[in-house]
Length: 100
Image 1: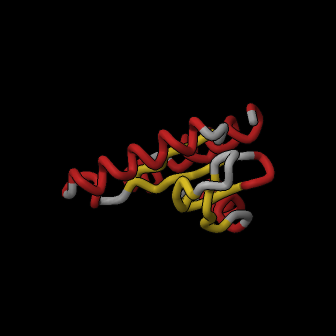
Image 2 (image 1 turned 90 degrees about the horizontal axis):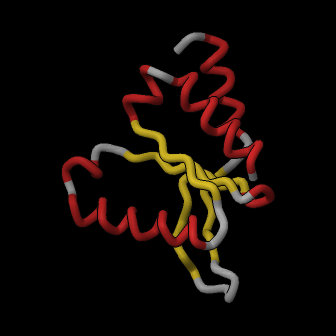
């Protein structure tokens, strides 16, 4: 990654940790890879298992849909984009923050 993009992604990832997401009734919806609870932004990393394990992919799709239905903005990041187009990932995360 170019240094300025690497720094941008580093700032994004450093400010959040994974976190449990609950619905309005307090029921557990799932665990987010990166969660900015105060602005309701979730970043989910779609790894290789999405390509090789359809059951895992289906579970993740349902979990992410429930995050969105609960009022969270979800930014999905794929391995390829993170390493070949990191500036687009950083821009998508910024937009999620601006619109949340």
